[in-house]
Image 1 (cartoon, helix red, strand yellow):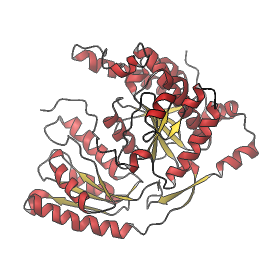
Image 2 (spheres, rainbow, N blue to C red; image 1 turned 90 degrees about the vertical axis):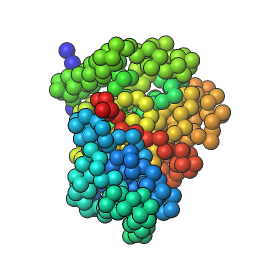
Image 3 (cartoon, rainbow, N blue to C red; image 1 turned 135 degrees about the vertical axis):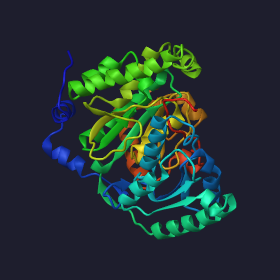
Image 4 (tube, rainbow, N blue to C red; image 1 turned 180 degrees about the vertical axis):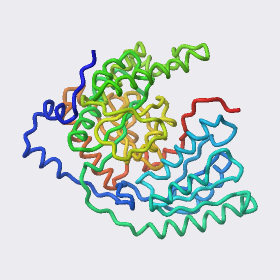
Length: 414
C-alpha cells in the first residue's frame, strides 16, 4: 500500500522551520527577466530555431553573424511517424517559449513534417516577438541566411534593453540530472542536489527531475512519495514502458545502463545506480509526471519528467520544461551544458574536481574528505544557483560547451 502525503504537511514536518523563519526565507530573491506571459527568465537571448534538421546550417550561419543569438541544431523534423513529428513540434514550441529566450526566429525549409506554422502561432500567443522564414520560398540558402541575419539582428536590438528586476525565488524552475556517475555521486553530489531541491520546494519553487531509466529498481520508492495513487501508478507505468521499449528490440540494457564509465566508477548494477540517482530528487512529495515536450505552467513543487538519461535528449527535454537552470551531479566528470539553460556542475569526486576544475562549478567531494557537510555544500550550491539565475555564467557557458542537443523520439525514422 502506498502512503500519500500533501506537500504542505511533508514540508512542515521535515524542515521543522517555524513560520517566522519560513517567511524570511520566502523573501529571497534573484534578478530575472520578467516576460510578457509573467514567467521569469535567467538569460535574454534570441533563439534561432530550425523546424527541421535541413535548416540547421542556415541557423548556425545566422548565429555566427549575430551576437546575442543561440540555436538548437537537432536531427528531427522529417521522415518520422506522425506521433513523433507532433512530439518534435511540441518540443520545439516549448523551447521557443522558454523564459530564457527574449525573442524567436523560426527557420523552416518549407516542406518538413513538423508544423512550423503552429510553432509560430503558439509562440506569438505568449506575447514574445517571433518571426519565421522559409528557405525554399526565399530562393535558397544564401538568401535565407541574409534574411535571417537581418531579422535576428533586429530582434536582438529590440530585446537587448530589457532589464533584470528582483523576483521571488518561488519563480524558480530548476531541473536536475546526474551523469558521468560513480560511487561518489550517490554519496555526495546527488545529496547536495537533493538538499537544494528540498529547499526550493519549501520556498514555493518548482523542481523537475527525470532519467526514467534510472528509476529501475527504485521506482517503488518514488511511488511511495506520490501525492496520490494516480501519480504513483503513472510513475510505475512509465518505468514499465521504458523497459518495454528495450525488450521490444530483443535487448536488455547491460552495457547501456549502467554505462562502462559507471561500472568503472564502482556502480555494479542499474538498481545500485538508481538508488544513488533518486537521492538527487530530495525527499519531498512528487506532484505529478510530465510528458517529454511538456512545459511548466502552474506546476509547483517536485515533478518528474519522462526522459531518457543521455545528455543531449534529457537536457533538451528539461530546457523545454521552461527550466531557467539545471543542477547537474557528476562523479567522473560530465562537462557539457545547453544553449539556453545554464548547467551548474556539482562534482562528488574530489579527484575529478581537481583534475577537471575548469569544468566543475561546485566541489561536493569535500563532503567525502570530511571538510564540509552536505548542508554546507548545499548552501554553497544554493547561493551559486541564485547568482547564476541573476547572470553569473557557469563554466560550460563560458566556453560555449553546449552545442550537442537532440529531441527524444519513440519511433523509427521512415
